Image (cartoon, rainbow, N blue to C red; front, side):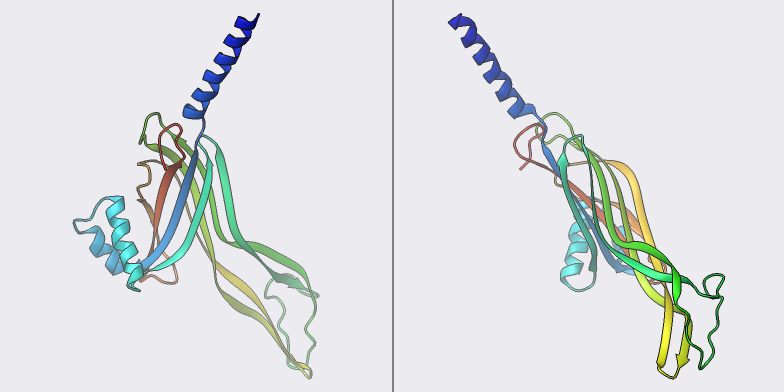
Length: 227
């Protein structure tokens, strides 16, 4: 009976050690959006610098020199093979209708009139969102299969659509103008090596481009190696 108990304990210990060595690991995914002049990006891409790591080095150097700027940085860590998401958002609410109107912009207030109270509002979030699903292969230094959806929504400005002036002062109602960029896809990445996955074009800043870099790093000493 004691021999059987010892064998069970030994088998359990072996299984625990194997799980510790080959079990699930964490993968950290970093997404950086960097804006730089379109003409400078064209020069970089037409030159000898081709790899993702080299491109990142050049663009990151431009940030240090003040020639480029960070737009957004999103980081999320999840277990290999599992999905994860992170949001960094602000909510904006603005009036869409007011008493006596049929919709946005239907009321023209005259001097001396009292501005009607809004009763219908619209809301929208703006900021950064990242969704990931990362899976690391077998063996030390194995590549990481990564699927991501990254979205950046920016508030450009508030456009006035209704103003009023009466004896107690003036009032102004405005509607926001947003700009949204999204990338969705799958890539096979080397561990810890940044890769340029897409470029966004700001519609109100046509002289700029926003470069999107992605890096995936295996954390711990389990399956696939890593830090």
